[in-house]
Structure formats: C-alpha cells, structure tokens
Length: 138
Image (cartoon, rainbow, N blue to C red; front, side, top):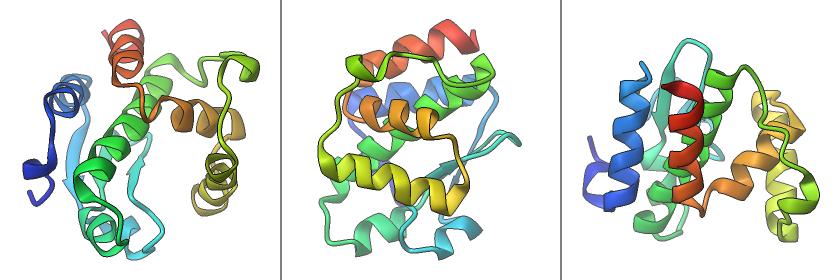
C-alpha cells in the first residue's frame, strides 16, 4: 500500500484499531475516481484511503494521509455508535475552510452535517479519535 510510508505512530495505531473494529483497509478504490475525495468509510466496513488523490492534490502527503485517517476513523467510531457523538458545535469550533469542506463532503457522500462536523473537528486530534474508537467499537 502506497500510504504506509506516510504513517506516523498515531495514524498507525488508529489504523490498527480500525482493522480490529472489523474494517477492511483499501486504497484508491472506485470512490477515489472523484479527485476531491481523500478518504471514505461506509456501512459495509470499508475504510478507503485515496493516496493517489492526496499525492496529486499538491498538499503534503505526510500530513494529509494522517489527517484523512483520523477523519475517516472518526466516522468508523460514529458507525460503531450508530450515529454522531452529539458533541456541541460550540465545543467544536472550525475555521471557515473546514466549514466549506463539510458542505463539499456532504455533496459528495450525502453524509450528515453533524457527523461531518465532528469528523472535521477530530481530524487533527488523534487522541480524541483513539478515545472514541475504543469507547464505541470495543
């Protein structure tokens, strides 16, 4: 898998938790034909990293592979829980560019605004992602 060299210890640990939660890890699957997609999780327990899209985006792959893993792993925990965590939006402030990313994600994957808000907030907080994975998936 092309994304493996970009993993840091935290993203590697989170991927292990995702595997243990019963998800198959895939890379550059069909959903990745949409070049705006960096990752995807679904109810069929597929966890997809679009490494090719991340590399071609012009962004630093080392940063965005991990950020994508954290974001998608937050969705795994939401699937395990059966929906969003319902953290107050006041407790999850996001910069304007991430608020715009929520709208883009919803248009691509028809997701829940609250679930996307939570995942965007957690995508730079690996300790919180590990916490919700352990709490809701095990």
